[in-house]
Image (tube, rainbow over the protein chains, first blue to last red):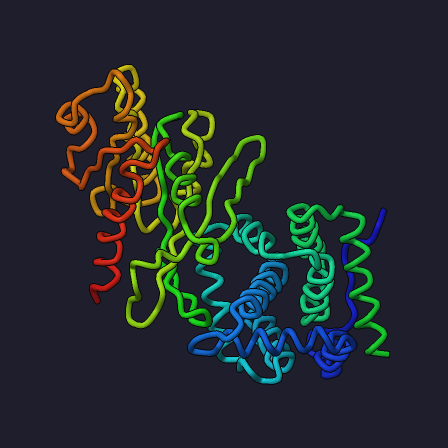
Length: 182
Length: 194
């Protein structure tokens, strides 16, 4: 049976956020688009609407995957803090925590499966890359469990990526963060 | 349940099209989707399992302006009218800010219309909601068909609450936006009322 659950660290491990940031930051282009998207999102009139949409899609997917097995207050705080650092503080953690509450409401009103399908529809040719990033971000509490993997697999279904490939993307995310922790 | 996306500065409203099978709910959605600017809408999404099916998309109606500085995004949802999709219909009503009941104007569909509007009231009541308190309008669709009931007959059968009503032929777009705008006015008035 293939693995469906991984733990890279305890949730309160002080090295965890740094390890995830280094795993994400290994790709300079990725950090650049995340920051550009964050800046475009908070602008009164976004100079780059596509970048804003891409960033918001990444945020929503990270939320949907991370909250697949519930979303404890501590997990919200650590994910918001991680995303704040990832955006170069373009969006602060309070705004991100508020955004998670907004997404709670979105899921309640519009449906979790529906929101996942809606966000998936925004992914383009780089859907595999986006899913890999979401898997890394979902490790903000040190754990990627079966419900989160299921959410990633469901996301993959929407963009035509099979379960085996999703599992290997999740394993790669775990390996990359794990390597930064060693 | 309107929800606010503070980051995107958007107020999000869920509008549900309800009605019997083949009454033209999907035709309403398709017409709005096809005539909305590309950059103002999301993709049309169909989610289906063995027992559930939902069709939806969201868009920013340009002509609605903003409410307290926030853009308004509408999420239009529908579910199949067939009886065996009742679980889907219940689910889709959850969190609805506004309802459009699409009736088929043909006399042969009178019974199906009545059953469906009763089913709507029952499914809302199961969730502790009252149709009379919802933002709600009725569309008498298929006015272009050769045999149709009069608006007075349809009103007597389907609109005891006296909510706003619109005639339409959704297949060719007639009345589709008028209906949505009519409901939007009700929804936005509620939003703007503190």
